[in-house]
Length: 400
Image (cartoon, rainbow, N blue to C red; front, side):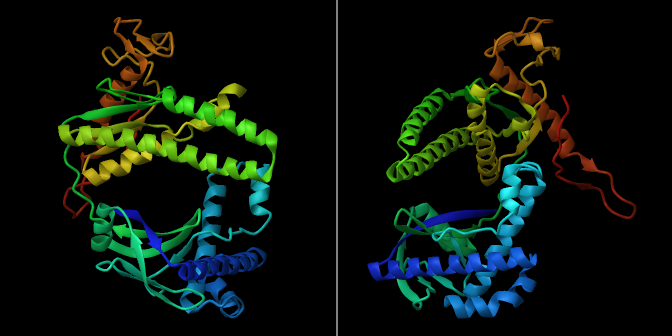
């Protein structure tokens, strides 16, 4: 499993100036390489490197390996853009966002992150120092700090490149670590999780994680944003950016707390975690204008990602199942009808009379579908001629 560890650098003022000069030089070089790639259409690393390698070293004062990392950074940026365009994340070919993304070269902020491999950056984990290349020479013995558990994992499992970033005048390194995947234990049952806007998560155990506080916080932030937008000054623009970052961090913190608690309960009780597959829900749903902001800020995808990787780290089974009619289907008799859910909060089966909170019923339906899905996932695969029978983990979606 590949995870990221963020450590805080503790440079002297002179070292901080060298780091800033290095970051700006690398991003100026990346902008130059991006223009060449855009005009020539070269997107492969080897082909683009042959064209720009000498110029990048001579014009921007980069050594050999940093110049190679700059080219790789540009190639990765265009690969990411191509993936977004293919997935339709930037709209259709005639949309304004699509034309803006494809009509000019990819640009890099002066303080954008710069990757360093082991030739440019070495770690002395025992002394908690790093040696890093800069345009002014190599800086040795630069101290760093971090959370003790993260530092322990860093010293034991670090592998791959690290990213140098600057945030609000402070310097950080994002280091890649390779942690062995724990064995997924066979679940005795499942915890079904229904994700929503009013209730961020509701489990099949009828545990409800309300989203009222987060909704109030977002409304308050929206009110403050409108006030700052009316001022339209340089100071208000800076404060808007800080507020946006703060709001995002708050939502991420809430999702971390919810996912951590759900996975810990699943691990303690020997069960797996199942969620609804909600991919593309924003494209399928048509809402009123006053509801669009609420849906666009709904952090369901991030919550699913947190549940997935936390379950994987804990050795807990994780599944995504079909979300169709989970809040309209009776888990006892199977009757599915829109009238089973007369209000947003209430479920009452028109056939057998089963009643309860709609989100809890949806969580039970997710759990039941996970039981069926796990049987298919772990079922033996028919052996080919001349081969033994094997058991293969296959992602499946159980129909409603």
